[in-house]
Amino acid sequence: MNFDGIVWNCAALNSTGPSSSKSLFFEKTFGTNFDVAFFVETHHKDFNEIPTELRRYQNTHHIVHSTAPENEPFSGIIGLVSQSYKIVGTEHLLQGRILNVKIEHSTSGEKYNLTAVYLYTNNKLTKPKTINIVDKLKQITDQNCKNMIFGDFNFIDHPKDKINGLN
Image 1 (cartoon, rainbow, N blue to C red):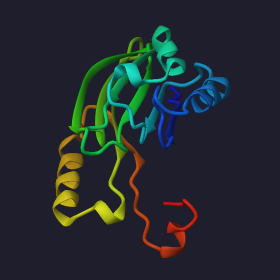
Image 2: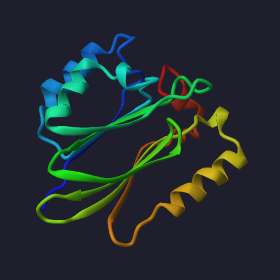
Image 3: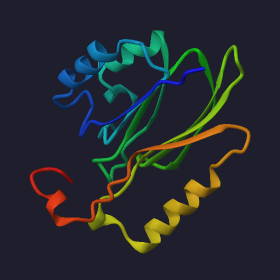
């Protein structure tokens, strides 16, 4: 069985910003031909800030999300999961930064343990935060599922990569 997924750091995808063109691009490019799609760095603060173009997917996909907390307005995760799967559970391991979603295919029974991440940039990453993140990611592994961890880890080591908006 194929499992098709998309992950996109969209650098703001909420109804209060210029997100319509991004949402329309996604909708036109992928339609409904995917099992899961996760958008990170959405900047959304509640469900109503999810762009209308993505909320239209409610007919074909479950919408899961982890809002950007007030003290970290540039975080946030939105996920679309095909209704061919049932949502077994969701857990906000780190609000707006790590969202875990367990799903099961309705006919095959195949189980997935999906974790979308949008981690801190190097200048905001401390050793205690790193230890906390690693501990959370270790704890979510489920031997009864296919485990996937994906997203934007923001690990940029070389100064050359930090210029011209590449960070």
